[in-house]
Structures are given as structure tokens and as C-alpha cells.
Amino acid sequence: MEENGIIQPLEDEDLPEAAREVTSDYDPSEEETTFGSVTSSVGGHVWEYGRRYHSFRYGRYPLPNDEEEYKREALRHTMLKDLLGGKMYMAPIGDNPQKIIDMGTGFGDWAIEVGEIFPSARVTGVDLSPIQPHWIPPNVDFIVDDIEDEWVHANDYDFAHFRFVNTFIKDNTGVFGKVFQNLKPGGWVEIQDVLPHVASDDNTIPRDYPMIRFYSMVKPVLREKYGFNIRVLDQLPSLLESVGFVNVQRKVFHMPLGEWARDPHLRLLGGYFREVMMDFVGAMAARPLVEAGFDKEEIEDIVREVNAAAGNRRIHAYVPIHFVWAQKPPV
Image (cartoon, rainbow, N blue to C red; front, top):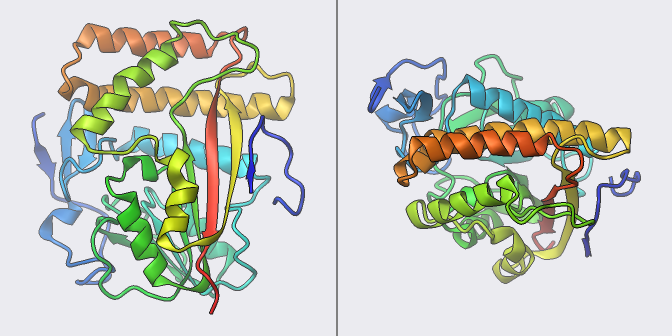
């Protein structure tokens, strides 16, 4: 089932160079992780272009992991909860999941809150960066590793969750194959992500709209420099089915870019999303665009223009956010 459109209220049933910092407040609880063996680099960070990045698998992920990025992720987390009416996911995982894994957990907000919702469940967050808080619920743990590695001793998960991760993965087919192998029969996977495409329903977007130009700059960088499939969301339903998943469903929300909507709830969400996207533009401008060869003046111009355009309420732009969930066949 696929449903597209402007956000509607959910019904109950829908419901300087390579300088390294070697200290970290993260303390891995295991010498061997879910995916492989940890190395001495997991607790370090790299400072470049005025931002902080992970040092484990250096360069694997283009966005920073510093305080500015935390603020962006925290606001995005709030935005998606508000979008879903307080819910954390859309998959029908039931009331008693026992093992949940959050892939690319980032700063861990989703994993921590889900751990509080299900105190009897073991919730594991996996990320390249040791940036999660030290004080967490007793049923939550975090692992520093690459989710594209082989899974060494992970199995029997009830639910695997991805949020704003899959457009930054090189081999989604391989990742979902591993998820399929390590879910319980009847277990669920859910993906939440932004499709990098700007549109409007009333033709108010000019041809030279800055956010479109920004995406045209970023897409080849992510594709050619990092090897990411930035259009993977278009392919997700068929990809999941090819791996073996059933009951594949998708819901697409048209998230307003800016506070142009008349509806107060949409206007609030659009304000959230504008801030999230402006911070994303800044994060991409810090390292990926510089290393791709764009000059400083060109980068500063696009950042300034994107911010100004998103504040123009006469332009009714939106970006699709996809929620896709699927089930491993029950026995």
C-alpha cells in the first residue's frame, strides 16, 4: 500500500587538518561488537573545516558529529514525533517487542525513548560515532560500528529501525539482506528518510529556486565521492521484496519547507523543517562541498540564498519524507 500527499492528521489506525581528539565519554561495553571487533579509533574524533567528525572508518560518513549536529538531530527528532502524533514508528510491532536495533542511531534519542516505552525490551543503537549520552536507561546500549559490516552474533530482533540513514549507505541491498537474516520470523523493519526532491502543488517554485540548486550541487558529490544511492527511497519497496520481505507498505508526507502553510500544525512542522534543512545545508557546506572543489564564495552564496528562499512564504515548497515498513514472513 502506498499513500502520497500533503501531511494529514493520522488516525489511530495509521497511527585544524586531521587533528584528533582521543578522549570520549563513551565507554564500549563489549570488546566484540554486534558487527565486528572494535578498534582503538572508535573513541576519537577528527576536526576539519571548523566541524568535528568521526575518526572510526574515517570519511565513511560526510556529516559532522558535533554540538551543532546534535541540535539538528534533536530538532528533527521532535519534528518527526510531532508529525506522527507522538509515535516513534509506524510499523505494527505490537506491545511487547523484546529486541530492537536502531541502525545509524546518531545521538541516540530514538533508541533511548523507545527503551523507555518498552522497559522489558533490549534496545541497541549502532553508529560510527561514540556520541551517545553516558547515562541511559538500563535496557539500552550503544555500539560503535559500521552497519554495513557483517553481523557477527546478532539475531532474533523483533524490530530494526533506520532513520535518515539509507541515503548515506553504499549497499542498501546488502544491509537489508543482513537485517532480514537477523530478524525473528514475523519481525519488522522500518525506514524513515527524506527524498532529495523539492516540489510544490501550485507552481510557486521558480526555476532557479536555491534549494533545487543546492541539491544539484550535493547529489553528484554524494554519488561520486561517497558512492551513495541518493534515490534509494524510490526503489525501497521493490528492494525489500527482492530480499524476501512481505507486507511492504509506504506512506509519503509532503513536509513544508518553511512556515507558509495556513494550517497551524503544518506551519509548525514547516518551521521545524526549515531549521533542520538549513543546518543540513551548513553541514554539507562544511566538508563535502569544499572537498568536491566548490569555492568558498560559491558555497557561502548558496547557503545564504537557501536560507532566504525558505523564509519566503509565497513559495509553497515541500520535500517528501518517506516512511517504509516491511515484515519478515512469519513461520
